[in-house]
Image 1 (cartoon, rainbow, N blue to C red):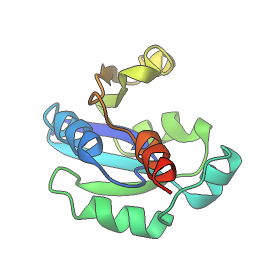
Image 2: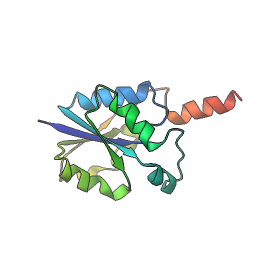
Image 3: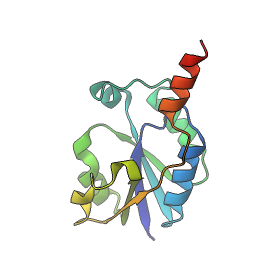
Length: 130
């Protein structure tokens, strides 16, 4: 079985999220999604609309996702890859090169993001409509 992992906040779920999850799953048989915990988001000075538990619940309902785990810190990726026996690490292309240090443990793939959509854009558009 080929196992894939990806990381993200996955707040305000949109088509871009679904596309990257679908394309990640197409690379293997089992997709693990590590979701930033509320505490980790605070450390990153990032605020989510939905709580970690709600984001986890939503992701677990998506047919491409086999398992959801918490992302608690930047350093846990190497341990997650080993613990979950991961073959391929996937991130959006805007992170190109940032995770190449994991190549000694698994394949690292950067997928193109869906053009014209992001959580940041959604929040900005909503704020502009106030």
